[in-house]
Image (cartoon, rainbow, N blue to C red; front, side, top):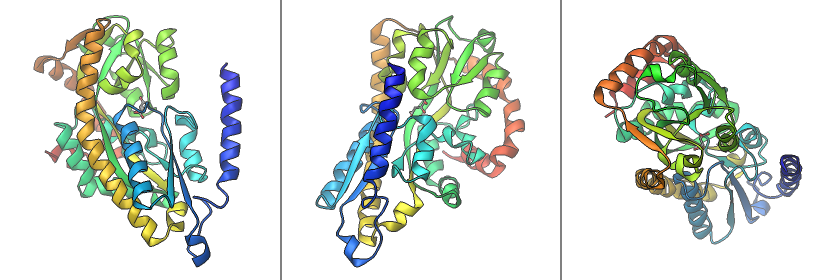
Amino acid sequence: MRKFKTIISVLVAAVLALSLVGCGGGSSNDGEKKAEKVVIKFSHVVAETTPKGQAALKFKELVEQKSGGQMEVQVFPSSQLVGDKEELEALLANNIQIIAPSVTKLVGFEPSFQLVDMPFLFASDEAAMNFYNGPMGQKLMHSLEPKGMLGIAWWPNGAKHFTNNKRPLKTPEDFKGLKFRTQSGGLLDAQFKALGAGSQTLAFAEVYQALQNGTVDGQENTFNNTDTQKYQEVQKYLTVSGHGRLDYVVLTNTKFWNSLTPEQQNIFNESMQEATEFATKLANELNDKSRENIEASGKVEFYELTEADREKFIKVLEPLYAEYEGKIGKEYIDAAKASK
Ligand code: LMR
């Protein structure tokens, strides 16, 4: 089945690459090509019912409406087209024109993006959004331009919480000997190491199965990702920790962007701004609803860290600040800490 899926993915990718000649990736600014229909492929890894999934559909609706159908956005959710491992390469090759990876997955291109994983860094959801929309967040978002990727927006999901199927996680000691899935290496591996646990980086599409067959014991995610991936079916314990963030940078290919006419760029920008406002309003609502769903499933035992518990985690994870300050950039960490 897996092999069949891989063959289908390769075929779809090949057809897409061919179909791009003369559409999104191939148009230029000369008069004749201006009238060509622009096709924008937007690929992401989560379900359509998530904040990212909904915002992608909102962007599609707005672009198509504002351009009178002259621009078309094709949205591919749930790693249908490409998964975590391939989406950055596909964007760079201009085989797809928009992705919105979780911030930490950009660590291979720019280590500063690991900022979101610094334990207990942001004081609240608002503090995170204000950092992203402030000067340092904008600097970080634009840092991939020399690599051919244009940052166009920050989209929120929310705070991460731990789940596992072995025992309730109330103190740092409870993590000893467990193995967790991470979205990327680097700081997230160091976080679990500091807690005495092991870790393994896995693509999002592989997580459910890895939890089910015991490749890993647990994972960390937002309520909404946990719920929409149905991890409650394969996890017994959830610790409401809010120890890190899971948000997105929406990226497009610079060459594709430069191929758009100024009018098309305006439509793109206006639609992205509206979709971003939509995503920002939706994220908390969907996470709250998902928390209720997981609780209502009756399959997961919840534990909410108390202030005293949090202090214990902060103490154990504190050395990560000294270790990662240089890699991430002190100016980013200071700005994030100061954000309200
Ligand atoms: C994950 O891999 O857990 C998330 O980054 C998925 C996503 O895009 O929200």
